[in-house]
Image 1: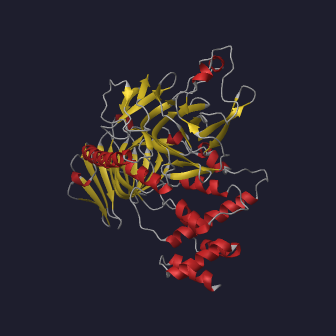
Image 2 (image 1 turned 120 degrees about the vertical axis):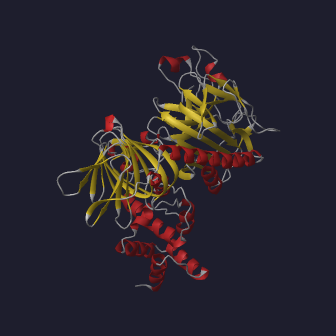
Image 3 (image 1 turned 90 degrees about the vertical axis):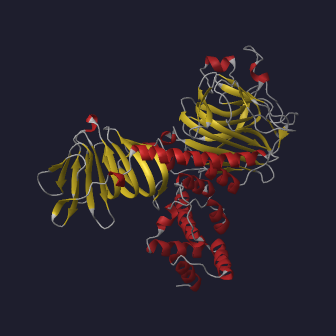
Length: 573
């Protein structure tokens, strides 16, 4: 084996660093030598470590720096970023080795490169494999809902799930924390990590390790919880089960009677409330009843409220610091406002700041945490109007949103209202600048598509009298399984670098090279909707957003990926 290859693989497998000089030398060869890079990937595959490409740590900034671009694969960057966007993000930060990241990228890069080379030559930048764009078609039917998540760290390699997510049959692995799972049979499970549990159907689950408290009403009668040695059957009561890493198993009857059977044996035994049994070599033996060993609804709620309060305090500190950034012109944080308020306070004051928002129809509701405000939008008519003076070369748009549905072709996040477009009346064509050289800059549309894409469009001109937009779209990642969850969406337009990037939850998911043009105008803005012309109304066009917003930031400089990642981390619910 080539000595460079041997050193690189050895460093990665041992999770250890080489000297700085040796590291730089090997990275340089990885960047420049395609054959070397391919050999490296093949060695990784031999050792069975391609899973590095699917681990929980988001890697794009370091991977791009370490590996560079690939000119012969035009859609590579967008495809990799889209894959990374679907990778779960760990709730707890981990220390990781740069060599692990390089190896993960090499495996992904080769896989994507090979796939792209096999595609038709007409493939365009931003192409996504069908398994990503059509993920909903591959999903299994849901059997439960993840109702609450408290101080959770998911196990390495486990997909991160947010509150409200539907759960299909399959495994959940927790490293820390507690989750509440409500099965469609009516069974309610409180699972405390570290734990490994498999949902087999709405009426059955298998606990490999960990602790589970089951609250079961009459509707869930017959629900079964299995362990490696036991079958516990609900008789309309509540019970707790724990399985240790060494295989010790216990069943505690928290309320009422519980039926217990041995795996592979016929017949069951019953225990009454406040009794417990342990499985050992001799069979089921009596043990001390300890209800405090199991997660209970009251304790879960208490911990959940404490965690939410802590997160809210941390976010408020970060939000206050953001208000001091001279480039931030609009910051709606939906805080310190009454449900009766008809205006939304812009926390930024001073020269160049945007206006407060005028609330039209939208209703106040709860945001990411209890005690945090939000506005809920339900489609037609509802919006927030605001003004931001001037025209701007670069922009950062950031919003925490909860998408409840995408019922129409285009839903407005933040769009430029064009009074000259709709005040002209039915008999006149929409009036938009015929030439982008006219003063006033370009209108924009920050929007969501019915297929789950979100995008940033800039007016290019008219043909003839009809507005033409340059649309820059992210992959279709806002799919139904993400509806009802709080997401951090951001778009960065960097005129100096000539690029536009989309982010979801702090991870870049698309990169574009928009054509140069005049500055962007934000004089008349509408959050959550856009007025339609008479002609559009006759066609049933509607831009109304269905969901909620609890933070909006508009800045006149491009935020970096690290800034966006940090702000997401401090604001994640």
